[in-house]
Image (cartoon, rainbow, N blue to C red; front, side, top):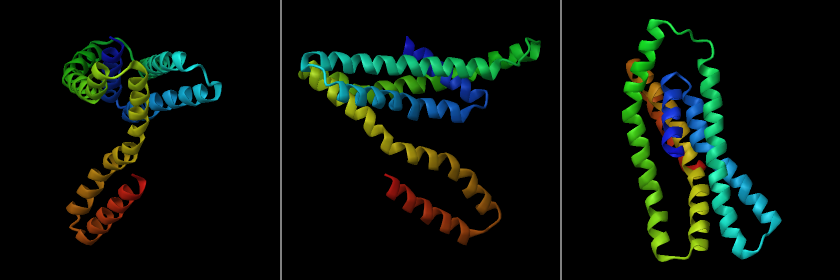
Amino acid sequence: PIFATGYMLQETLRGLGAVIWATLTQYLVQPGFLLAFIVLLFFLNPLPVVRSQLLSLAFFISVLLTFALITWRLLVQTRGHSRSTADKKLWIDLRHYSWPLLLISILQSTFLLADTLILALFRPPQEVAYYGSAAKLASFVGLPLVAISAVLPPLFVQFYERRDIRELERVACTTARWNYYLS
C-alpha cells in the first residue's frame, strides 16, 4: 500500500508540473536514503545475524522517508489552490490521467523487484538482503541517462524545426559520448 500510494502521489506531482520533484524522489532520494543507512550500518558493524534484518529495516525506512517527502511536496504544491469548480474538475482530470501512469509504475516496480522475489525462493534472507541493496545502489547508473533523456527531445525538435542538421548531429554525438562516460 505504501508503494502504490507513493507512486500515485508521484504521478500527481508530475501532473501538477513538479516533474523534477517526482523524478528526484524516485531516482535519487530513496536510493540516497538507502545508501546513507547502508553506510551507517557499515560503520556500526552489527552482528551478521542482525545485519540482514537491519538492511530490510533500512529499506523500509527509506521508503517511508521518501513517501513523507513526496506527501510534503504535494501539500506545498497544492497549498495555494482554491476549491473552485474548475479546481475540482482539475483534480478529477488529474486523477483520470494519473491512473494509467500509476499502473505502469506499479508494473514496472513489480518487474524490477521480480529478481529479488525469485531469489528469495532459493537463497537465505541474508543473501537476498545484500543482493536487494546492491541492486538498488546499481540503479544510480541509470540516473544520468534519465536526466539527459528528459532534456534532449525538446532540443532535437528545436534543431530539426530550424533545419539545423549539423547542430542536431553535434548534440546527438556529444550526448551519446556523455551518456557513455557517465554510465
